[in-house]
Amino acid sequence: MVKLTKIELPKKHIVYGNEFPVAYTLSTKASPIEIEDLLHQEAKKGFFNEILRKNGAVVLRLGITDPDILSKFIKAIGYGSGDVPFVQNGSTAQRTQITDVLTTANEGPGELDIYQHNEFSRFKSYPSKLFFACTEYTAKGGETPIVHGAEIFNDIQNKDPKFITSLSKRGLLFEQTWNYNSSEGVNWTDKYAFGRLLKGDDTLEEKKQKAEKISREHISDDISWTKNNNLVLKEHTEPLKLYDNGERKYGVFFNSIPAYYGYIAYQVKGYGNESKILYDDNEEPISRRDLDIALESSFSSEYNHEWQEGDLAIIDNFQVSHGRKPWRDGKRKILVSMWDTKNREEFPKYVV
Image (tube, rainbow, N blue to C red; front, side, top):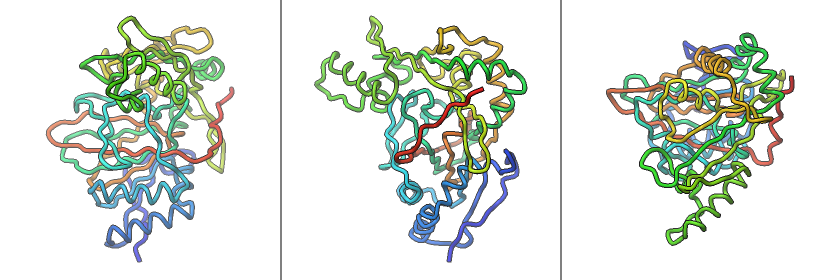
């Protein structure tokens, strides 16, 4: 009978005594149906929920690259763990639907760095789990860096405790613009941005009304439009959260500060959209010094996952952020599936 067997990742981190990430492979060769059944049974026993709570991320080295089969594995784990597929809205990344639960992760050019972010953490709605599946990998580079939210939180706390206090007490505000009709980046009319409800014969005003409906339900109530019909949102968030892994409670960095500031700091047009990073209480810009420390801490806290074809990685989006390293000379296909826990409790803020 096939089982999951623990393997060692040589560059893993240790966070509060737990491996980050932890990794497993199959004890013996097995058919896709046998693997699917194994994953579903383990999920129903709470294995994946427990290991993500303790370790933050898990890599399953299964050796399967067929997206249709991987989708069955993901659904076996997702539904077996009590989760449901998360519907993406407000995306700044180009996506293509591959299967019913898998899309491309990001279609930005290979030379583009993507810095650390907790998926959709700046919105009202965000997923609890992310699945990343490697279906092809012949490139040089292209690792996926992940950061444990406690590790970066503690690093910033040691280097810049006043910044942690300010974020806790003042909150975080992103001001972000989605273009209406641009050849660069994602437009607000795109399906995974704010276009999910749009129809081909909608007038511009009808499109705006439908985009505002999605924003109010899932993103932000703070909506405005430019004279060029670009969509501007102010996203009000609590960037520090209190995580309970069952053994202890600790602060985690839960935001997209490194992702958005990275493009400002290096003057790279990453998302193709304008962004401002402010305190939420009075819209004061966060200092470059504090943002520099946050970005550098995200780099020093990274575990860089070196993909093998057939890897299926799962991360707890509440306590683990992710990014992407540049690659060249080959192909790199990483697919993503987002899931959320039904009737989950509110993710509490960290209070100094």
